[in-house]
Length: 401
Length: 236
Ligand SMILES: Nc1ncnc2c1ncn2[C@@H]1O[C@H](COP(=O)(O)OP(=O)(O)OP(=O)(O)O)[C@@H](O)[C@H]1O
Ligand SMILES: [Mg+2]
Image (cartoon, each protein chain N blue to C red):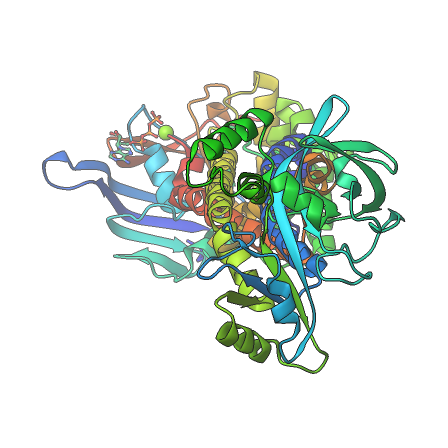
């Protein structure tokens, strides 16, 4: 026996490849959407991995520092450091903002990291060029995705920083590249008001008789000084000692400090379950819609192709072809269309779409396998309308009137 | 009367029921022997196509009897279980238009039938080629149907009707699109094939060019057949 489906496809190969390519672009978009979701998850995990922390200590009852704002005193780390099971603890600040270089600017997550040795929690774990920050002020390590180069002078708010090192794939959960600066500077930048605001605050403070007491010289200056320093950080990152159970250490910190502590697993749940949940749902909706559109297109194409073969199907039935063979003819064509579409889709997603998307697109092999299965399923289901039409064809039609 | 060929006795076919019922066949009696080609003629609406569809086992008669070879295939209901296999193995069809499958080449259009009957591809194809030699289309064996002339397509369609060596061939206006010379050529081929393969062939036709060639004609009027002697004129 010969393959009727194969012969039909070869006979109208151009039509098949053309429609397959159209379908392929749609499948490519679908795979890219899935890749964007995977990219979001991966960005979140990269953020957690790169922080080098086992525990995140944040403001009480917040989901900080990535999902909610969190402020804790910048000396909290000392107390945490002395808790049993804690190997290292370091303060960290995060704020996302525009970082300027000459007249361009880049959206980046500016991360304030504590001074210390390499390996201090919060520090970029490896550099692709240059060195870590060694001075207390005005040095920066930037992710290469910012486009900055070594020795670039970048401006954060009103201060200039020199890029001394470059990292790779250090991103926020939103996919913004990170720029590391010394903690002290970061606290300043986060707190910094513009000159008018500072002047106005001084004036208001001076107008308050409680602060401006002639018998206590120096009080006003002290108050103003305290107002313009930031004693807060967003979180304390903790590494537990080798062999210690992170959950137990977290419990100890919770018990002794009025702070909220998250483990790595909890943090992942927050990032993936809460922070990117809306984006994930949105992508999920897109996937559903794209699947429906693909199914509709396959159904329509296969139905049209089948209607164009009604006479041949009647003849085939008249000369004794089994229904199974005719169902096979239609279904195999449908699947062939799906396979062409999938191959084209996979190629466009990998070579064309993923590189041009601004966010990280992670094309997981498993997703491709699942995607392939779904495409084949959709094609089989979509061919049902055409198969029903073919089953209704009366062999008597071949004899005519 | 031999037990071979095809025999139809008192066949009736009613379409629909009640007030809208149409009695398309009221009393059809026919007998065609192996090797014989008979004409089936009659005015429009007389029941020719209906009879062909009954014989072709695509619609069910209402009453009567149809005997194929030694076997009763219809008597108050079908007597064979697998009508599909009956059509495939024991009835050949030739239509007014060739109705070739456009995505199969000429050989596979014909070889498909023995393949459907379970014959190996090589054997099915060599059977087709054998017929092409007899029908003088051998040189077009690897062409696609769309590359053939109308007459060549019709000869391929005849080969398709013959390839499983069915005891009966039903031809519905097989010469309608052909000019007089080609039409006669088709009839000549059908006669040769009928003799060669011991086939009973029924040709439904309006075609004045070929009617004189039949030795026997069934004339059908209002669903009743009348046997007539034909001119049996030589067509060579
Ligand atoms: N499916 C059907 N349902 C109801 N009536 C039908 C059906 N098919 C045919 N008829 C009727 O049966 C009668 C015989 O029709 P049939 O098609 O057999 O005629 P015919 O001899 O082939 O005519 P023609 O030469 O025009 O093709 C006609 O009156 C026709 O209207
Ligand atoms: Mg008719």
